[in-house]
Image (cartoon, rainbow, N blue to C red; front, top):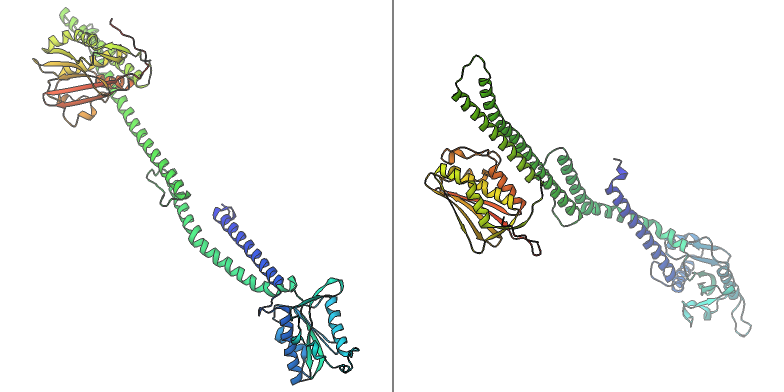
Length: 508
């Protein structure tokens, strides 16, 4: 990236440009104010300044009539803030601060010198030619030295200050009432430029140290974190200290990084589960297929003479394995539809008694074979549950089959309903050996079998509890398990439907 495209340089250039413009405007206003005030560097008004110069020159010529007035004036007053000129009686014109003055001022000075050389006609004792009338001395003006008069064309001027040497008018000093703007600018311009440059440099350094420096380091840290995250480092984070916009951007970046890290972790876990599922499905499908193939190959051997009883037993095993394979495939498809959101649920009022009766009837033969009693109890406040009848029955059927499979002979499996704040809870409890604590968090995982903790009894595809969990979650409910030695309780809670939901009683 080119340096001039950097945000820091753009901000710096903008800041310096604005500061420079402010300094220029301030300098111009200062010069204009000085010009309007009519004051010189010493703070004197034009009239008093002219009197000061005139008296100084009078003293100089009285001490040394041959003194170089031009050099003295420019050496003594060349650095003053107000331009003026000195017109001597011999016609010499000495200018300070400017080489050109308005012609009315020059004419005024010549007229003043000429008037001093004329005797007054209205006074018998008027002064001799070339003598200065004491009544005209600047320090005796009744109207004050700062009184302005108007000459030809209405041009304003201050009274010329006379240079008196031994009673004679040797010249006059004329100070314009306002200093020219160009003169003041040339006089103060270099000094103001030096001050402006110093302020710019100092302001730039301070601004860079206090504003641009910290902002640049924090943005640089944000850039490094973004590059690291893009390179695959999910732990990269930007410093988000402070409460400004950069901190807000860093916080948003960190939130995005946290979300990406969580998604990456979830994706990795999903991939692991997918691989495990494929391995489990392959294993579960291969087991019955391998058994079926072995028995069928044995039956197809012409050289092997089998009696009818053996053939019948082999065919029964093949039939059982094919049924097992069919159930496994059906459970996989069912679970995929439930977790994928396939198939709409028909929500209606389902009588809990009818639901339990069907479960008991379905498992009557299995209970007789296992020597287990199946009992039901219904809370008067929980006689109906809102949900899909077939799916709820499937969930309770799976829980009951799982409980019967692990219940010891001579024990009982209890079906119960109760009212809760969240809705209606349906529970299935058995009196088996319980589930070890380290197995409890995994009992709803696909193909997970805690056989070692359940008295070594095996059976099932390992998908029954996963299907129950998917059914309950589709209803918006929760499924929990509480297991200890001698009692294991699976409880599913189906929430009450929202107000206004249509309920259809189903007693069939």
